[in-house]
Structures are given as C-alpha cells and as structure tokens.
Length: 321
Ligand SMILES: Nc1ncnc2c1ncn2[C@@H]1O[C@H](COP(=O)(O)OP(=O)(O)O)[C@@H](O)[C@H]1O
Ligand SMILES: [Mg+2]
Image (tube, rainbow, N blue to C red; front, top):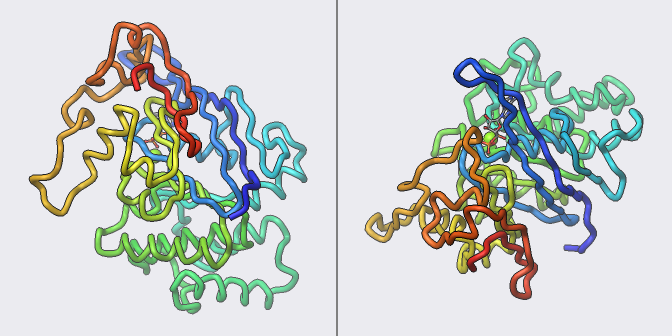
C-alpha cells in the first residue's frame, strides 16, 4: 500500500432541518468530521445508528450538500468544482447503498442499472462494448451475464446487492464508499457479499470507505477504523489497535459488545445500558459524557478535540484517557 492520500475530508459539517413536536429544528448530523483515505486502503467507519455515517458517505459522493468543510479527491477540491471536472471525479468515487431494494429502479433491467454511470458519462464506445462491459461486470460480482435482461423483482436480496456493487464498479472507480452493504441481507449471504467486496478490493485495487454499525464486520475488511459518535470522530486508529486496545470509552463499549462465541464472555457495555443519544438534546460538552463511565466535570462543559496518542497514528477525542 502506498501512503498517497486519495481522499481527504476536512471539517465536514452537515445539518438538516427537522420537525419535532410542531417546532422546526436544525440537527447537526455531521459535526466537523475529518478523514483521509490512502490509495488501496480500506477505512472503516463505525458507530451506532444515527451517528452520521451515511450522511458522511452521501456528502462525499455529492448526494448531500455540506454546510462547510472540504472534500479533496487526489488533491482537487470537489465542493464547488466545475461541472466537467466534478463529473470525472464523481465517476471515480462511487457508492454502494445499504438497501439494494430501495436503490435499484424496479422498472429498469439489471443491465441498464449496471451501465447507468457509463451511459451518463459517455464511457461506452459502442453497443457491443457496452453489452460486453455489463456481462463482464455481472460475472465479476458472481452473477450470470444473462441477468442483464432481468428485473430486480426476479432476484434475491443477495443478488440485488451484487447488482448494487456492479453498478458502483462500472467504469472501475478509484474509491468505493460502501454504506452497510451487508446489513440488509440475510445472515446466510452476508459473508459471501463481504468476501466479494474483499475480492474486488484486491482485484480492482479499490480504496474503500466501509461503513458499518458492526465493529466485527469492520474488523474483517478494514485496515484502519474511525469511530463516530453523534456526528464526530472520537477515535481513529489501525483496526488491530482499535480491536485489541480500544482507548476511548465509547470504542471500549463497542468492542465489548462484539458478539462472542461464548455469550457468557459478552460484556454489556454502555451502549446497551445507557441512554441512546438524541441530536435534539446534544450535550454541551462531550456528547458521550451522559453515558460515559469515566466522565469528569470538565467533560460536561468542554468538547474534547482529536489529539494524537502513541505512535501508530491513533487519534482520540477524550479528556480522560
Ligand atoms: N435527509 C435527511 N433529513 C433530515 N434528517 C436527516 C436526513 N438524513 C439524515 N438525517 C439525520 O441525521 C442524523 C444522522 O443520520 P445518518 O447519517 O443516516 O446516520 P447513520 O448512517 O449513522 O445511521 C440522524 O439523526 C438522521 O435522522
Ligand atoms: Mg446509515
């Protein structure tokens, strides 16, 4: 793996307007996230439902507008880029969505869905080249090329997600942002689809942001992990470091909650016992303080920022570790 940074996100802020009890609010879904992805690397993003993972991914691929921040692809700023250079960058940064049922158009054939990005960008030089590319891509994700003329309703959930992956890799991008690509699938097919993603990563030399609420899944595919809590990254380090020596109290709770073969070894962490967070009642200081076993007075008033700890590039946002 080379150390070249291919994607660099700095201080991304994203807010949405929301209604609650008849009043309008702005919720800060992403609250100053910085991430960088090296060429050939898989960076896992983990955190509970609602912490902003999907919004980070959708903002990077341009489906959501950030309030502020920068998103650089190979050193070029994507936000506000001119339309032709933006199109070229978008073709290189693609997304696999969590729910293939919602992301595939039921009225389009599988082949037309797989070819969509190529069609829009004028990638195919002829009908024959287009058909060959669709067939090769379907084969590459473990589907029979004859699926090209079928419709989503004719496929199983696992097959649909293979189509979702095929759509993201034709033409071959530099980066795939995979948003919980196996969470909506039957447990029996999750491992197969995860294996496919790892094979593609190696064959196509993809760099990946792999989003999951499940640190066990992240551990299988990622070399580095960013742990998110309420719109912020609270710890970032190599995957083994995170799994074997989690430092942030929230990361510790996530690691403790990874299902163990022996259920009696499972520790109930704060994420199962404490109050789940709400963006409507964001605490003033550290967002994790209300659930944190080591919170001190300072944590209630002073938001911790990421700082480097140790020698392996770990960063952590906690006053007390
Ligand atoms: N389009 C939207 N409109 C309003 N609120 C949104 C929208 N998308 C996400 N949110 C809110 O932003 C927060 C983060 O959501 P999301 O990024 O989907 O989190 P995650 O993927 O970690 O579960 C949640 O509170 C969610 O309700
Ligand atoms: Mg999500």
